[in-house]
Image (cartoon, rainbow, N blue to C red):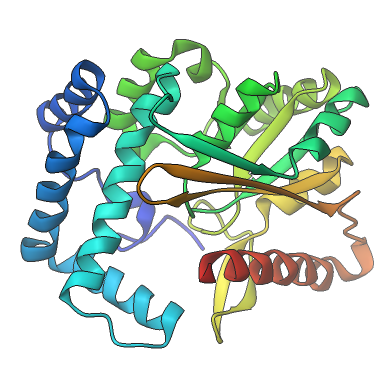
Length: 287
């Protein structure tokens, strides 16, 4: 792959204006989560009625995941859930979580890893809320550094940085100097910190492998798996699943003590790791 094509997520600019985004965030900050519910409902309905691209994507996904036709209200609930999880970032980043309930499964694994003095890679997906996982990490005194590409979401990320400058400092932009990124990542692991990455979409480069996902072939990034193999660090899967009206289920599970990618069959090894990851993401998505 050369430069990202116009149809990829990398070239899709943020929807809405900076004024509208700031207004929603300020409303949430001033009046709290309950007061934003009517706003969330209106935003979701607007997208359901007028945004064909969003509604088409939602409908296709729901039908693939459930095996049933997705009607008007199913798509609306899907969009409303996405809007709610997005706005919940305000409360998660500012520590105003009294209106939220968290359940945890597997957090003892990260506590044990931290106690070992060596960091690890946390792999997630665009499923649920990564901010909920970071909030859980703060509660357990875990330093989590996010590896990601942020050029196409500058408006929201600038606002999130204002809300929590400390967490903004724990972001590693992978579009920066590759040598610098690797050095910073290595330093985090040596200090016993965690690296977190989402491995379920491609577009930055040609490092990807095909896996079966919901009964069809799909491409996944191999970058995080290559990083883990280079760093020789353990890998855990983490998910923060939202359950209406106010609950986040934080899930962590062991994925690998070490990602081994032998030179003699590098591509085959990467495909096997990607398939293992894709299978678990599918299982979580079906929930």
